[in-house]
Image (cartoon, rainbow, N blue to C red; front, side, top):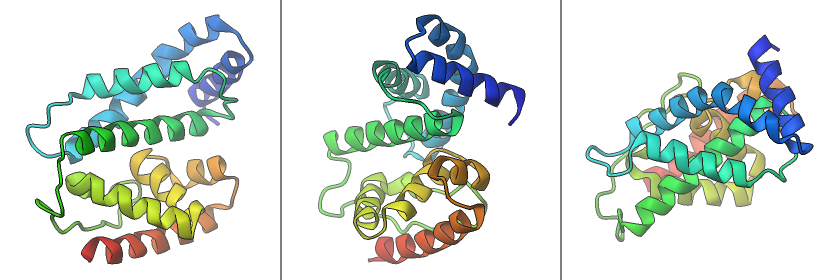
Length: 187
């Protein structure tokens, strides 16, 4: 574990144990990474999206701070929760704007092989969210792998740490889940 990753993990645990000062020391360490995550999400959104990157970071950060009763395990766990919150915020935003009505505006989505990156997937974020919810019913771990790798930008190693399974298992789940999602999104 690198120095900053270890610092983040230690501060998260201290914060979870009630050390309020840990939160003020944690903020500058995680803010830049949260902004990078949000920027990646926003690049996948349609042009002219009214939600700005900073607003997404701030909304997710507020929810993370409000979840101080979470027993943070480590940095990977924190960013996995952050990714999940950002996904939820964007999906809720899309649904509230009636972004997609009965398939209107649906576009074919492709999944690329590069680790952690799926190009243009959020062009139909609502359909992706629906498909991920279906996958979670069939295989919750595979759905979490997609969420952590795609939405959280976690590596195979960080994902295996967050899920407490081997890196090989994460790799197999990643490939199988992407194939399943491709079939679902083509329908």
